[in-house]
Image 1: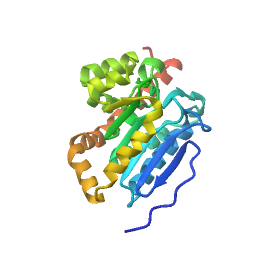
Image 2: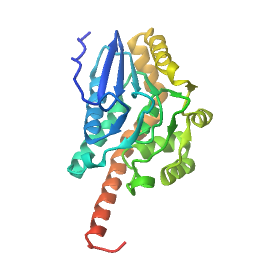
Image 3: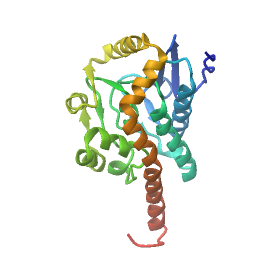
Image 4: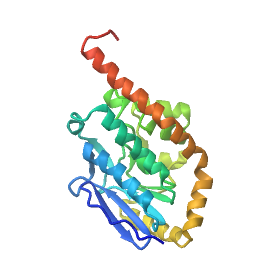
Amino acid sequence: MAEAAPTPNWATIAVTRVDDIIELRLHSDGGPLIWSAEAHRECYEAFLWVAADREAKVLILTGTGDTFCDALDTTSFSQMAWHELWYEGRRMTAGLNEIDIPIIGAVNGPATIHGELPVMADIVIAADHADFADHAHFAARDNVAGDGSNLVWAELLGRTRGMYFLLTGERITADEGKRIGFVNEVMPLAALNDRAWELARELARRELPILRYAKDAIGIGFRRDFRQNLGHGLGVQGSGYWAIGGIKAGRYQQ
């Protein structure tokens, strides 16, 4: 088989590779991730990099410390044009969706900014203090959730609960996530990383084609629909930016 691609040096993603298992650990300066324009760009690059790796069998996606991501650096996005956000945002969630090996999401704490990323995994385990919310969009920032978070949470929670979750900023605890079904296991933070690697090694015992085909067979409906609907969601999110800009500039009334 072809050799694995060289490991890039990202500022917000630490890469650990042991044999055919890759771990992507998100961070900011070695601590919990603060979502930024840099993290936005590097996540899409990293997901495409993993998808192109022809040797990897399992991906672990996790955070740093006791928080997955609970803070947002809005200033870093202020100089980006919408078409740049659209380009990166489409490739970030679509890239994660297109990874054709099993993904383990190890949620090490509150995931309220882009918490959809770890729960897009095929197996989701969480620290017992973790919780989930969408505080990057509508409820906290009057921003349309159209970047794939809308599709993920509607799929996991159902349309009505998903709408409530996105419109109100509701926090869902790890235990409640397990009861609903989008979290598989809940445990103390100290046990989380070891459990993620234990699961990864168990999966990696299988041959790579079987892992790829099993994932494709189980996830075909959501992955197809996600691919088709993402462009529309980003379109209406961009329309929201345009509308707010027009209102602030006095071009038309609300």
